Length: 198
Image 1 (cartoon, rainbow, N blue to C red):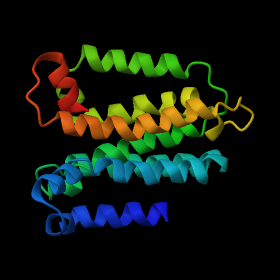
Image 2: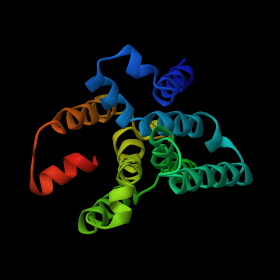
Image 3: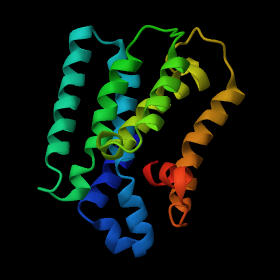
Image 4: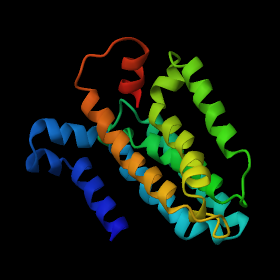
């Protein structure tokens, strides 16, 4: 049901069904966040199925996702932006597919997320950071979600912390909605940039 729902919603965005079904502002808001609808099912598939496969299978899927993401990024300006912008979700899914396939526990997950966040902040005005903001956000959040907030999703032997798990997944649902609402306000400076590129 999850995979079918994500595919149906993505199809409605690409073929502009949301434009006909929803008020303009809401349809635009949903369409601008379509990367998540490409990212989420690919990562869920990696967690549910791929991470238990042999390395050549995982490597082939990662290579396919990377190739698709690069092709979509290269097509910006040449095809409908609702399709081309999916590159960010697909590229992030390639990296996170490889990441979730690593043997657990990962002691360096928090440090990796912090380092990537620091690089993103320090290089926030460069073209690659601006163009791949969602990619970097998805990749940065993966260690926080899978190895700090909900370790049991990838490591059944990890301690069960249901409160932290619920808080993690609630935050991952609420924060994007909050940022989408804040985008309508004219914030300036670093806060404004964080909101615009989140």
